[in-house]
Image 1 (cartoon, rainbow, N blue to C red):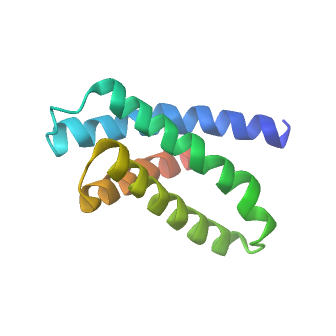
Image 2: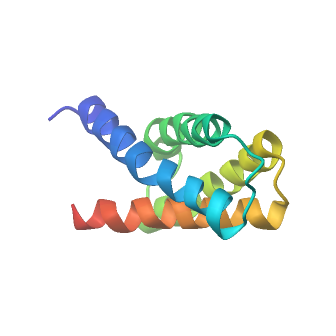
Length: 114
């Protein structure tokens, strides 16, 4: 499979995993019933669509150690998605951070199992 095909598969898998996680955290864990489902789905989609290409195509050109790549890359993704959730969903930064951490942690763990 080509690298680009692996990326597209990874993006699809990330969206399938992370959108429901973000939804559950926003609606049920933090109980923001006023935030529309479509807005949560859009913010989740946008967060992954903006950060995953960076993780797959930009960062590898600058970081050559696999462990550093994963630590730095995931940290930057979590921070970027925290800002996206904070701005688009008008959540507290602490809520946005926990949601981003949970969503990314879920996709990493399930990705490793597959």
